[in-house]
Length: 315
Image 1 (tube, rainbow, N blue to C red):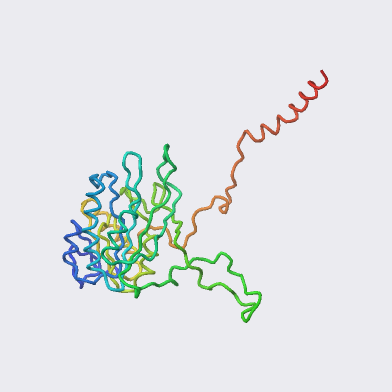
Image 2: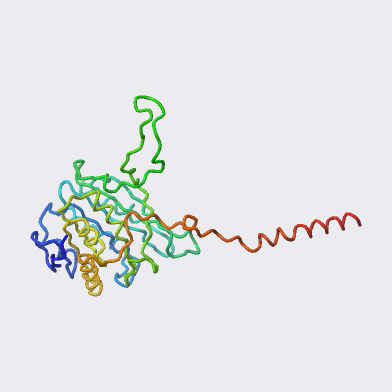
């Protein structure tokens, strides 16, 4: 999209970018039926963050159901909904939100296509259970006739030079030259303190995560909607690939931050982690692991221990 596009604060089908400073239900009321190709969001997890008030799980699910129902109304018949969630935590016990939200979507007639696992290496360290290192993207569609573009999101083949060794295609490459299907487990770094995209928002997701969804589930010119916009990541991913996008955010400082980041994207100055960059590997980067000091120490002491044994045997 051109940097000539402006960022509107109210929705109209004639706009290209909309950042609505208010409740998503108010934004949804202004959006026509079946006009959005992709609804993608990471709603509050009800963890009591600074931007959310912790609710009872039942109340939280009721509120989510109201928003989801409106998102289904505005979704195209060939459209997709991607709802990215983690866990609800109640006195140390977790409730997987994808499990409890699944019936909300299916009761509205949606069909789950994938339960995508987003795996990352960093996060809070737990002492009473294993540390959480994944979140889930629930992908639903309205019909079997949905848009799915695999080629733009293919990843490098594990064995790119592999060939058929017999049959009519013997000697030919057996893998797709454009790359392989990325599968339903995505290893993408999360946005922590040393991430190039880090802002003051505590639960920001990476642009490359949404880029993969935008490229595979929409075409150029389609509308992308994020009812819980945060710092504008979904709009940035959509704008980058010539889609239209709208989102709502209730916290004024995040509205300002989202607008600023989108403006940087339009100007070509926003710094993000490239979608095709491999996850950092210390070994591949030439940083060999150091051996713990106790290992050579034990090896050095072994001759001494052998000599002691000889002394004891002599006695």
